[in-house]
Amino acid sequence: MHAKFIAGLVLAGGLLHAAEPQPLNENFLSQLRIEASRSHPSVVAGKLRADAAALDIHSLRLWDDPMVGLGVMAAPRSMRADQGDLVIGVEQALPKPGMYEAKRRKAEALQRAEVATTRATLLAAGALAADDAIELALADESIHLQQTQVGWLAAMAENARQRAADPMGSGSDALRMETELAKESQMLGAARRNREALAQKLNLILGRPLDTAWPQLLLPATPPPVPIAQAEIARLAHLNPKVRALHEMANAASQEIRIAERERQPGLALGIDANVYSGGDYRSTTVGLKMNLPWFNERSYQASISAARKRQLAAATDIDTLRRELASDVLSSTTEAANAAAQARAYAGEIHDKAQQATKSIEAAWLSSKAPLTDLLDASRTLFAIRLEQRRFIAMQLAALEQLYTIVPNR
Image 1 (cartoon, rainbow, N blue to C red):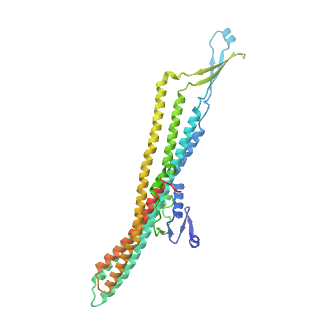
Image 2: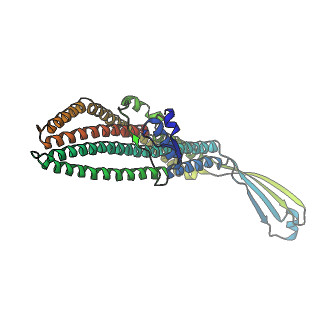
Image 3: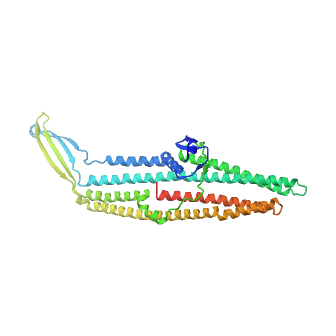
């Protein structure tokens, strides 16, 4: 941004606005993505789930709560006085070796998965804002071209009126030009209303008031470079947040196997019972160790272990499936971006130059009454369509690259 642009900036809704046209560069789009990621409710919900997963880690306990018991003996007085009539007991289950560590690692993997999922949601929200900005910029480019077309038609209509004033001239060209001018003016009005709706849609994505004003946005004059598909596919496993989330879910599934295996182990509990006589005298203390016998439910434990292993295999298969799908999306996005860039360059070069030369030649011929009005109008429409298509191809390439960057983030 140059100094003149910075001097005209106005702060609104967390993003800098300007009265003069704003180029749709990476700086501007980056600000939009950041604003969308801060305000979009899906991102807020994702962050809350990640925070909850972090608290789940702290909720894990190595030691279970101790059990406290109180018993009363019903027996003759002499026996109660001799052995005690009150039994106070405390029992504490001992941790199974490796159980706490396995549960902690599972919770940590789930927390990392939530963070990665939130990252994917953040990228999607930013892409929505960027796509709407690209669409708004295309609408501004279209309006600019339509304004130029209306100005040209107005000038040609004036020429036609002057020619109709000549006793040797015909008034049909003037009427035709007036009709074309009225039709193009109506289309320009519709384009402006459509632009207003697009601006409101962008404000909605960003969480701004619907009437927040936007400057005129300018698409790049030339298409930006397109990344190489093979290189982007190679980066998928490390940079795509959905793949990373599935990797963490696979880690959590592997910890489920460890948890199931440790559930199968015998559990120990330490118990202490004290016998006290209600008259106030202490009688005795018993210390014991209890153990559950898991072998009676061996089939149940084996089923849990097998189920956990199958879930781990399924999670690993899901990763491979997602990577293939994303690789296909990368190929589609890069191909679409490359095709749009090639067509944008073609429409800005020889195709445009020849159409412009043809229009100027036919216009000069019409002014000297050597060409019919229909030829002039056809040439003008062709030139307008070429210019608009070139802008559309630029917008299509930017949209394809935005989709690519949500799959393989570079920011």
